[in-house]
Length: 426
Image (cartoon, rainbow, N blue to C red; front, side, top):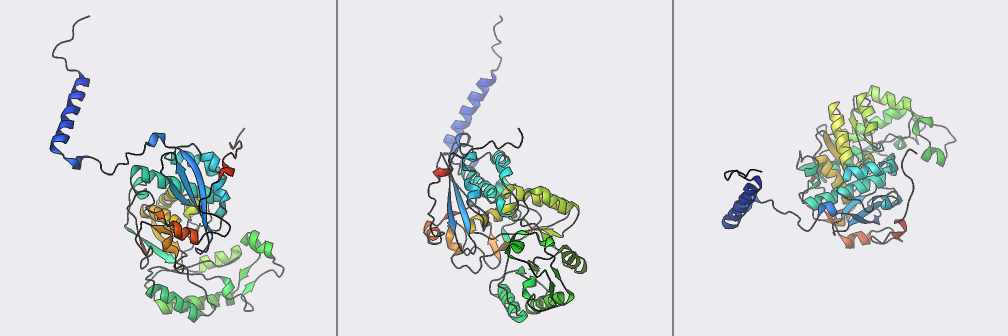
């Protein structure tokens, strides 16, 4: 074998000598700007494992909201929230299915558990876990969640909020005016259901034998309820009074019309120039795509705690954008889910406004720390720049508002060994 040419340059030697030279340069010259800053050197991402899932259920926020915490073997934890009014069981039943997984493999875990979600509150567990995984990832990589979604398109998020109803149009209008002038909202919402006028004869046609089962579990189109011309005229009086009070220079949304039949909904859509929207109870992107492809609605309205979580809702927004459909977001929970929504909204191009149901809950802001207060400031929420969702819990405030008979993130070992053959094929 021939002897290597003495002028032959060993690539490994170059790398070693270059590294040494670079290292000596950094040490001697201290050009610290070239180094990445704030790297979490205490975390080993490839070795990260989920070890626990616990729940703390807050009440009257204004609804019942189970907050979840996912723990890991490296001390990093993530916060998420089951949708308002849903059972924490939706999340707890998934504990054994995610234990031992690397929480940074968010899409993989989501694909594993998304079969356990469903429309409305049944998606609560899947979505809560997905939020918490993003919170962990942001903390590990030391970036806000919106950075991992591609970056933010806005620094603050517009908020709209519900307003306490009144069957007196003038009283309702005054309350709406206060939302604008006192709370500083730049987008208003009123609950304009047929219940405001249904006690007036001739406004709504309905079966006389409707019972509790019908009203709670029978789909609206099957109830045979229709609003009459008289009912529509009376509802118009509410809108006219509100517009007179707040002016025409502010968006005004209404929700929800009530348990009306398809004919009434179609009529209201066809005869009114007001865009209609839906979606707060739709799980996953596919249902929204049908609406957008057919331009069945003017806007979509996902609730991130139902639609599939942060990434899925971001995908829903991007899909809708392709069809020229903007996206408002439904939300009715604690600041935990609120911040998940904020990060998604900040990074989604066709976002319009985010709902909030807690403007009249005085202690709502106190549930978390680490963000600007008030959280909703004159109709806007500042997008946090801290890692993950950007919040920590105020334990004292959470404990003060726990559901009676429950504890603060008590052990959930009873869910450690839940097992079944979950695959959807043999």
